[in-house]
Image 1: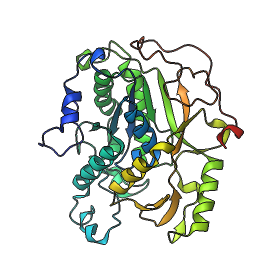
Image 2: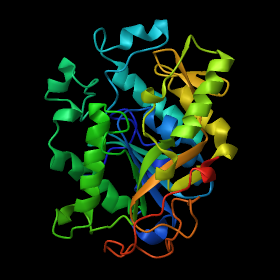
Image 3: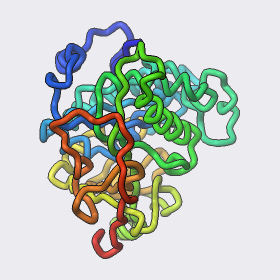
Image 4: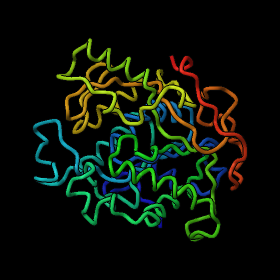
Length: 340
């Protein structure tokens, strides 16, 4: 099945996407190829906006797969409150346009929805009745959902995959399911016996989970409290993917692309309010806009630096991936001092 890109159903592909769709061989596309898997529109800009902007600016091929339209989200602007699921239930379609604007801000042309726009519905927070909706992502058959991502992997042939940890960063059902789907698709895409009609088997050499070092977010939240730009300040427990500093293996400097990340956050206006170097979700609790982004390498061999400063470190990106699981030692964690 051909993947459906991030645009309204029936609309023509934008020119940059159309060009990407026409590429069929590894020699047609950039040598560095990055795939990110996220649960809802806006998650990508919050967690990886600077990473996406920098790699896109450097000429890497960046592909984003978003698993739902985020239909269950709350809405910040009062004039758009009618979009919510309990009223017009049109928020998902609106958020396609928001994601389009965000990807324009970071220079990413190839963005898609898993199985096509609206294939999987937002599941809501854990424990709400929406979790039981048979249309929701939480209820999706794992191998069926992973199959949609396998098709993307075999088409795009990324060397690097960015996903969530086993808690989905903070326990949201769609984030947990996105983790499961990404890791299962990584496994299945490399198996030549699995659905050969989806394309030739492809092994992704490195898999990262998006992280936030505890010391970094504590400093950012303390500064947010001093600035007082929003009614309240988030707690560390509100932030996805927070870990002790020593868990971090990769520190990615995206500060030169801070304006692009901020513009991407602003594009998600139903979900995010931005004030200077801080933002808030619908809860009005301030968080810092973090432009040095952090990762944990969970599969594959690390590059020579500790911590790494490039997700492609250690890869011979001029050559196709081998289809074999890389051998070698576990990735070495960064020291807490190196994050400061």
